[in-house]
Image (cartoon, rainbow, N blue to C red; front, top):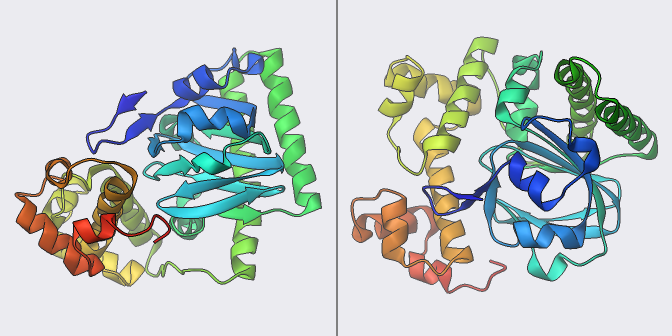
Length: 310
């Protein structure tokens, strides 16, 4: 398990394969993983905050478990799906990692999913809303469909046909479209935090690329010029596009990720504030204190001293 520059553990598909070995996955590359997992097995790998560097969907077959995603707790119970994307901070509550839950977990690498034939502009709203709503429930008839996908994928992996990776790419793409449609319906049925998405399909795609870059570089880069340069745009144009699409400024998006990072390190580690300052690339502690208080109303020390449920 690697350590990210921001101090969090980063886990990948190899870590899943090591901790949750599954004979049917022996024929797979490092781009795809699927297995049935008991909640007690998840604790050694996920009891400390970490990031998974791919996309992961966990479907609860029975029982329940409490999972923290970006400092918010979600109860994953029977017929509930939890989806995490690169950049999410994930942790299984230590008190909740008993033997009461049974799950199917499917994970794919960023390279694998980037090869899918997905309509990104169509899925943009959903991919952004996942930042606020990573958990959704499914109905009995929807579970039946997902069960059949799982059975088909498992059967194909065991058979190991020629061009298995290409076959899986198409089946998983289909399964994601189906799960995404179900998830979109659930979002429409419950109150949620909306991600305003207006503008042309091109503008939305640029915005999604910006968000992905921020997820990757926010601990080191907080200036719009860096992201504009990576997207081959002027800072002024990128800033206007982001506000038009999302209703929120580029610096506000960057700040939200930096504050989340800082809160996680303050809450889930005993790391000295000076070390957090270093890992988040602030020039000194005074600058970090002012930045954190301006965005949270609390000093880093006061936030760290709050009860864990705050």
